[in-house]
Image 1 (cartoon, rainbow, N blue to C red):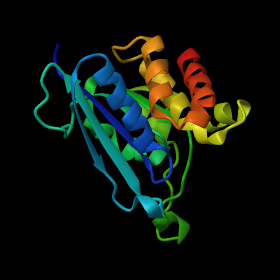
Image 2: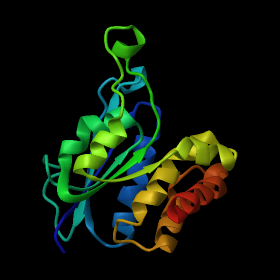
Image 3: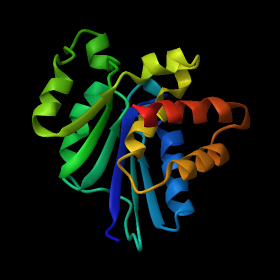
Length: 189
């Protein structure tokens, strides 16, 4: 099997690292060699968080090169735009349709771009979801990242049952049921 490249991008506090742990867990569960790399930036201040997950028979390095990501999971629109160039031609961009203003926008030094998803759809295969709205429907806004992962999971090589098993082993015990429910919601979209 050729090495698969997954990128997860978001803003600090969006659950990017938990999502990468679930992805790492599913690849190990399936018997692949896996390498993860996390780039935090100013995550605690609402800055970008980027995680690379590479898996296959033998993976030598953790970094995904530009133009090589099979799947790009973006928890925020501007982060999707910022990292879309990492996708390969036939890659899939899964975008949470949420806006979080970065500091330059908050202080008035920059404007948040309009029409981000529409622009991305011109160049890439884009799957968008308002995961926050879906998470509020099931009663826990913190699960939006697992909803996005559920949607993205359909474009990876693993069975739904295996995802649910890994989620159970990865998330805090008191959140297992709600996270499994969130995954099911995303998977059904």
